[in-house]
Structure formats: structure tokens, C-alpha cells
Image (cartoon, rainbow, N blue to C red; front, side, top):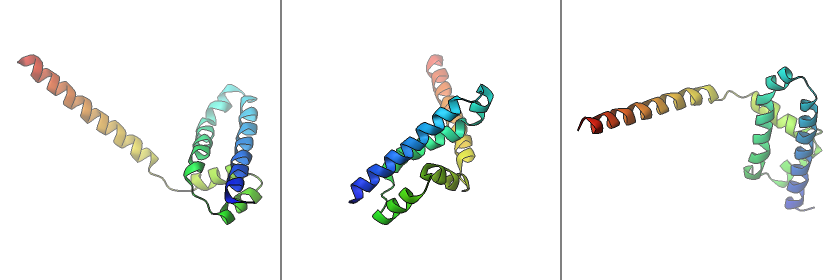
Length: 112
């Protein structure tokens, strides 16, 4: 089996896993669904990122051999320290600075 076929199999397996997770999620009460939004969204992002992962043949095969590769990747990702909250904070600050600058420029233009 060539690398493209392995990739397609892994993609299909992970998508099936996500489809089953989604069906299970939708069977839960609304409050529980809300508590799992981050996981669902992150799992969707993992599926998108898979295209850019550039996995080698042996890596693809190893993930295919895993019973739940999407869950395994999600668990690995959530074990890392990320800068997510710092990125959110930086976004707030950058946007605040941009809006303040735009407001100041608008005030100067109106004063003319």
C-alpha cells in the first residue's frame, strides 16, 4: 500500500471517529454538550491539520494501528502547554490599541 492510500485510510478512520463522537455528543443534554464544545472544535481542527502533517509511511501506519487515533492526538495535544490564553489576551490588546488609534485619528479628522 502506498503512502497516499495510508493517508486516505487514516483520514477516513479519524473522520469516522469524529462522526461517531458527534452523534454521541448530540445525544447528551445541552449543558453537557456545551461543556464539550472545546473538545469537539479541537478535534475538528485536528482533522483539518492532518493535511499539513506530512506524516511518513511508518507514522501513518502506526496511527492507523491505533484504535482511536483522533482521540489519541487530542489527548496528546491537550497535554501540551500552549500559549492559547496568551494569544487571546494579545488579540484583545492589539484590537484595543487598533480601535483606540482609529478613534483618535477620526477625532483629529473631525477637528479639522
